[in-house]
Image (cartoon, rainbow, N blue to C red; front, side, top):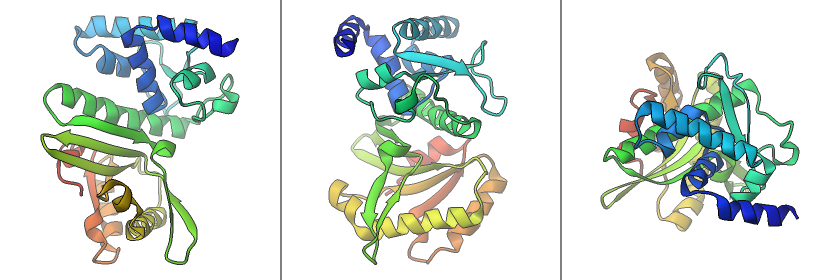
Length: 264
């Protein structure tokens, strides 16, 4: 019965409603403002925001999307301060039935720190989409957290994994730019950051990524400000000399320029 209803809904969805769902499937959470830029970026700003709200309301009525108040450290997401996530039906329809919160979707919501982090990831995706629309590199792939997770075996034969905040692949002419992105909100200690660097180094040495995709992406830390950038730069400088070139750090303001540079 549920699958039959979803099939009928799938047939009734417009192309823009599908794009709203696809954006949610990629980024986990969105605000109406995000949808206005990604889906309705060719409209006047006021019209784009009105259409974004209308489409999100319609998808909520269909039972594919639900909203809750934005509790991400005082950030506001549109006039009502709401963020939107896929319901279990939305996850199923988009092929993400195992997404975060899928098992308890009616009551589930991310913690404020996690929500703030996901919104920062979504901000990056939206900025890349806007830049591509304005002639910048095309976004070939944008995978978030669990979708970007990599599993490998270290030199001692132990099963390990890394989970970047995003795997980003951009296409500029004949050049493909690949990055493992870490969105740093200045909440992690130098010790944790150093462990992340060591994990990326071990994964690179495993050769699995190069075997599967022909390249190993650069690792880009995107941080709030120059002070935090200097702190992470010191962590990178403490890595073995042969590993330091794998890592780069940039601020949010300079993130798009850094992503346009050759990461691998």
